[in-house]
Image 1 (spheres, one colour):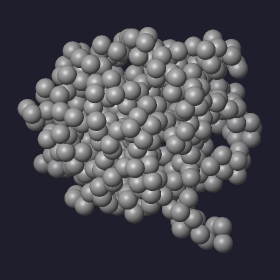
Image 2 (cartoon, rainbow, N blue to C red):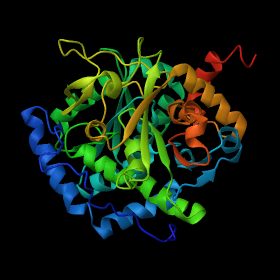
Image 3 (cartoon, one colour):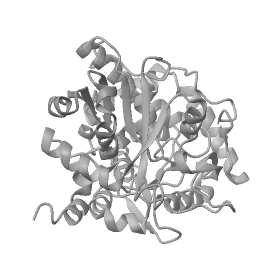
Length: 408
């Protein structure tokens, strides 16, 4: 397959939700009545283009000529030699704007333009989705407002400036934990009263139907490319596919074309933070089913159903919930989930930088770190695909402060 000539079009999946947006018991739409017409219209609008070759040809133009797709598949020889397995990195960090987020932003912006919307709003945690949204808004001449927790605004100052430079208005959300959860709350609140002319560009596989399915479909270009690239490079499927998980878009993006392959283990890595007995972001491992942001999924919550604050060194992973399809895949045993602590992620951040000359985002460092956590005898001579979801430029100032003694 020549990926430079082929056009990616999503395929129907055995893991698609039902007509009401449920993956098993998870997903659905739990929103104010005033949003139901907008969501139902979006579902119809998306289903009209979901498998439409003309729509995806337009998206493909921007993927190839603007984003820089297909993204490279890189054989990480140095870390492969160290751990005894053959490791390939899917280089989403090389995309324009520095992460996988630009994939769903381009496709949703093309849809918003076709629908005649004048304005795009978005929530963001680490800022990568916000930057990607501001980027496509500038590209297509749309107004843009981004909601970002005040805590994340402080630790992702560079991305905030990038958004403003691109013409977006950034709202620093002061409520709650002042992180991604609260940014999404305010974005939904804004959309309720502006749905007529505004497109809400959700940045992950979470939220009310059809967003989890739609973002999954779009991001699946990652796994579609990687599968073809590995066949060309190795002539076979990987034994393991590893990706970090916040809401879960980069993970489902790389998993989706491997989930039906019985020989492939898909492994999602949550934010272990300070450890499972301390502050963390492990909704799947330590959470319970509940409703947040229009969906039923696993959440970090207390016995009264009050949402607990998530924690991670990476702003993109400190979300107290998870996309509903991940909840379904966990319960059905179709994918495997584990966690990596802040300290382990920092170690991997330095490790990949110094072994391969590739500085990963703190989020992606969680996936890289899992290579060291697996037992050497269990992965010896295996073929492992790691989705490098973003680059570490955005984390430089934070890393500089945390690692000051190590690099004094």
